[in-house]
Every structure is written in C-alpha cells, then in structure tokens.
Amino acid sequence: MKQRALGSLQVSEVGLGCNNFGTRLNQERATSLVNGALEAGVNFFDTADTYGATKSEVFLGEALGKRRRDVVIATKFGMPLDDTRSGASPDYVRSACEDSLRRLGTDYIDLFQLHYPDATVPLADTLAALGELVAAGKVREIGCSNFNADQLREAKTAAGDGPAFISVQNQFSLLDRSPQRDGVLEACEELGLGFLPFYPLANGLLTGKVHPGEPLPEGTRLALMSPERSAHWLSDAFQQRVAALLSYAESIEVPILSLAFSWLLSHPRVSSVIAGASSPDQIRANVAAVTELNPTQLEELDRLSV
Picture 1: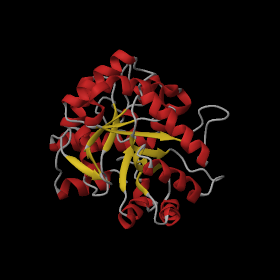
Picture 2: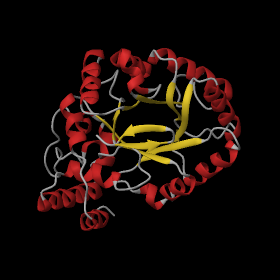
Picture 3: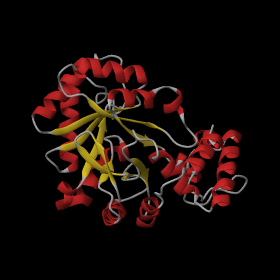
Picture 4: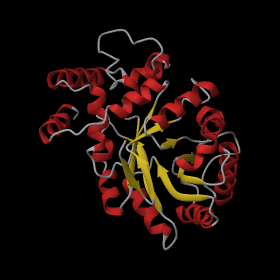
C-alpha cells in the first residue's frame, strides 16, 4: 500500500472509514476490520464524534490498542451530538477535542476536522482555538469537511500566521464530480490542500455488487437504507451511468471497483480514498483494487461519468 503526503502526515492511498462502527459493526467486528486493514497496509483511519453516536471513536481506540502510534487517526467535530454539543465556537472546539481524545483513548489526534461550516462563528475564532490545540500537542494537523472553494480561501486568509487547514473532505466519485465543477479541487491546488473523498463508491453503486435492473443484494448499505434516501442513489440517471461504467469495466477487463478507486487517485490532490467496509475481505479488496490507469482509460471514464 503506497502512501501519500497529507500535510506533515503520511497516509495510505486507501483509508478506512469507520462510520459503520457502533451501528452495523459491534466492537468484535470493528476490531477484526481494523486488524484486517492494518495487515493490508492501511494506516489511515477516519471517524467522527457523531459516528455510531460516539461509539465509533471508542471502538476504533479499543481496536488499535497499543498500535495507536503506528497509524494516523482523523476524526471530526461540529455536527450536532445533542441540543448543546455542536458547532465551531472556541469553547466547543476545546471540549469536543477533549471528548474525542477520551473516547479514542489517546493523547493526540493526527487530523482534527471541522465536520461542517458554522456560519454563526467567525472562522478566525475557530482556527485560533484549533491552533491552541496544535500548540498544546493535542492535535497534529487540522482539516475541514463540506467546505466550498470560497470557504477554503476564506479559511486560509483567516488562519493568518497560525495553523491552517491542510485538507478538505467532500463527496467525490465517478458518480459525483462536483469538486471538479465547483472549483474545490482547483482551490486545493491553489492552497496546497489535500483532498479526501467520501462516498468514493457511491454507497455501493461502484463496487460491482449492484447491477441496474436487478434486486439489491441483501445486507448491502443501499438495501438497508430508507426508501427516501435510497431513491437518490437509485435514480434513473445514476443507474444509466453505472450500467455504462460496468459495461466499460467488462470491456477492458478491469473491475469497476478498481476504476472507482484508481480514477480518484489519478487526481494529484487526492491524498487518500476513504472507504467504509464491513469485513476484512472488503478492505483487502479495496486495497487490491488500486491500479494505474492509462490516459485513454482515464479519458473514457471522464466521458462516461459526466
């Protein structure tokens, strides 16, 4: 598993998203998945305080145990946990960090990310509080998620001479190319930020397990979704694009899973592709999926995914 730079950090090209911890996965299965990821060369684990109603951080910390210093842990704060815990005020930044440190069972967080912009708090105030955490050694690097291009530039200016965001985590896949259209990837290049795609497999549509016109496989994320939410992913437009991508994958004898990961990693600003998994076999398949695509293949994928 190759690694790429993410600020001062070195992260595996494929990361493990821990959003299933505490929901679909109990502690035993989460530990098995973490063990499988480490054996496959994954060193980058992404979680959030909201995942599993705070259990994800607990399960990840327990699964890593004494191996904590061998990995890079990214977590997030800012999305509502309850009526009082949310946002990006300086006081909440500090308390959210302390809570995450306790749940993870560690004395530092490698990448502490603001999960969503908070329009009620000046970015400079949030960044100043995050800078205090960096100075105290509780956080190594800071990042953000769900920021647009203008907000990324604003954050860079607001940071002044203090610690600045080194990364942004937004949705990006062959079925959602908005970071290219809305200028976020361009802003990352301009500002020297790493990009971390979430939903890289479009909730399972790009795994090769889901085929348009056929019943959803039991146990898959899409099959477990509410009808209201799955309607977005199972729209006619997505189904047509998935069918075209599956046909192309078959024609060049490259699994669609490999196309999904490798197309993302062909973008220089992408530091790691964070994907969830529910078994060690899945994480091994994700790692093995990474390959180098030639220019003709990349051009065709661009055309089919518009």
